[in-house]
Length: 173
Image 1: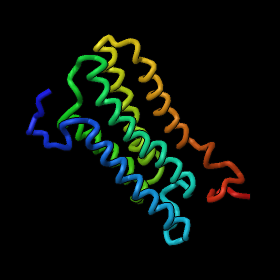
Image 2: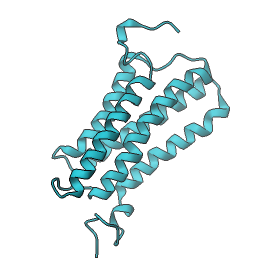
Image 3: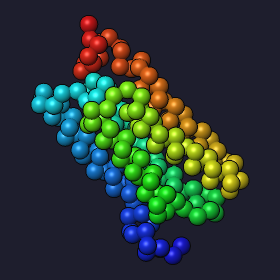
């Protein structure tokens, strides 16, 4: 496929921004985790440090890698054009907002909505492309992405943060 120069190199293919940001985010999360463990940084938002770390690895890092892979592979599966340019940029921005929301003095449903929106958008776009391309054999992958989005919402609704004997949990007994 010819590359559209108006989008810039980073937004010309879906794997580029997501794989790049996943690598950067993984390094930053490891450093923040170490700073948190040494006691130099308190808890972020409404998540204790263990829950924040687990969340960022699953729903930050893994979600970015998954989005980069999916939106690069789906055009090969369906024969449809890849996500590029400003739609890809908006999705990347949504992912970034979900990563930075924890550092802002925002609590409750706004933070959860921003964070959960990325995987919901990824699932919706994946379903749209697979269904429009009539590529039924890859529908189970869309289902798994939908389940990952639902698990992100369930993560925020609480049970993992209220386990009594988890190190780093503010609910320890």
